[in-house]
Length: 456
Image (cartoon, rainbow, N blue to C red; front, side, top):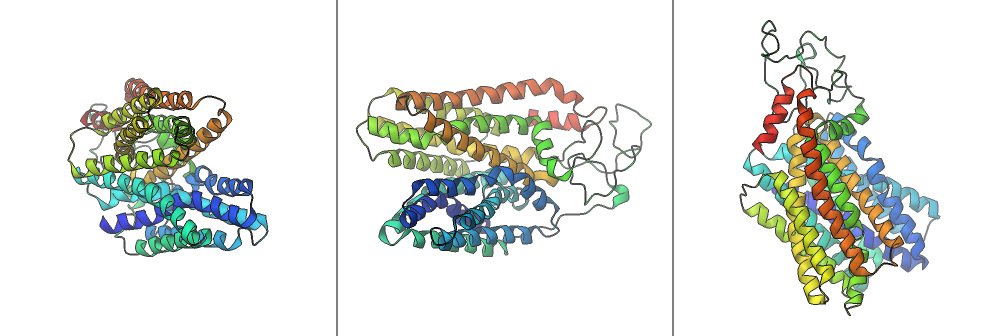
């Protein structure tokens, strides 16, 4: 895990620093902040659009290591290409490079996290591994912008951007040493028919006769040769295999826990996307015009501390409860920061909000790993991350359009979105329970899903 954490930190530091580096680099060379905004949009937009394709490729590659090395190398080359072309080459060329680099973004933001389930055993060590992975996210979100800002001030924005490219390239080289197993292949004649398994590797769908049946359904059925893994996905209701690029979407929709966590975190990130702008406005209103960056820094530090605390302590709290605690705690802390007039109190409460946000990310990653079928785990992670980034982009745009409202009102809206996300998570999970029995007619998989839900 140590090598993985080093790899993930390097890649995510480059990703977190690019938002600042692109704006500073464009502003220095062109003097136009609008051009920097267009480049940043081109960098972020593919995160959601390319996520299904990226996840499908990760699941279908015969050599997962080669895929991740290639994606991270392309990510590094795109960052280096932008450092050389922004303001020096025709604008469409820089936009095209940004689109290519952004298409590799889902591997950094979600694809790497899907590897944790293969690197950590399925016991208490996996919970700790995902807590450390969340800590890496938060550490990169603190370090990336800080390093870029420091280098841009002491040297130049192009130096900062080239350093990010070198960091991403180092992460790509470290990936070559990760102990990634090759995907196992089952003989075609004995393979069951999971619905959420990519098609090209699985051949034609087997006949209905060998499909596993519940022992309580028919005593005449032959016994099942082997019990599927705990996180194996059940077949789809119609028994047909989903197309390769839609298997991840099917998993997010058909598996209740994945549907609940995806809906809740996407709604929460509509608010998180507007938190930076709101923090700047709030600090100015509290008499500290330069304090917006401090508020976001202490929020990120709090999230890092929360993730590290969860990683060091073997908590008996199940992930679903951590999600509820995290969303409610973040919402209440931000609401209190909006109500109190003191900047010092606001900074303290932003830190508390971060403390709750860190375990929320850890729980989200663990739920995805526990409930995503192994064959589409990469798709689930990349899609989940892409949807969150897209939701954050929408939140940033909505906040920019609503700046006529006062900062405390905007912060109260963001807090309300966190609380609404907690309610949505509870409602979606509660609504899904009665439907689990009919998830796969006649098969034992719904019982496995129910038992998994109880064990949490």
